[in-house]
Length: 55
Image (cartoon, rainbow, N blue to C red; front, top):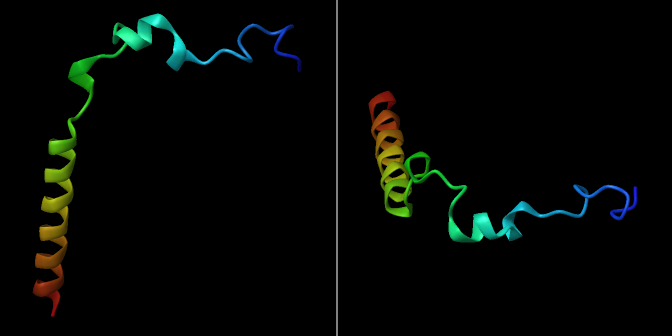
């Protein structure tokens, strides 16, 4: 389908001004990189501990 006949086909929501300003992003619904790093480290520690328990 040609993008000229379907206005939504060629549209990229990341380029909308509202998205660029952060108006459509819910900051309460997103985790920071520090939080994700902490979750990854905690998961690794738990995995190592469980592996240690089973042997």
